[in-house]
Length: 192
Image (cartoon, rainbow, N blue to C red; front, side, top):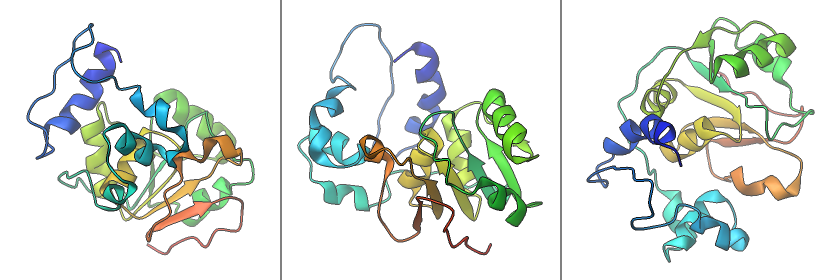
């Protein structure tokens, strides 16, 4: 964890009612954020973090992020260069939601996406609180395993997740109502 990463996530953490303060130090203070790696068999990433603290998976069913919604577009998308599924139908996403869609991510990720799948407006958000507010303000989030996808899951927001076909990357799969798993092109795209 770098100071730069802390500054990106700190505003989101500070607005959570169950967090009293957020600080960063170059030395280990209280809890290793890498402890989840010791619980790989626990299931998905949320289950692994819960197991690190001796908690059962049932705690992930509840919404764990609260933010004020900032409506900008009806469909927010995000795709990072990692954990991609070549069978996922991004061209249909761009066509179906054209005029109602915006891309959240780095300018480089946006460029890679638009070069491959077509033009989609870019939404600038310089910290994860703004990302969360934009996701909370949309009707649907579509993305691959990423920080925005984890935020959509924490908000229990309606989402379609591009599932990486490699079983080692099941860590981002959250089976629940309102979360459509996109294993291939056979996705029933929600109406907005």
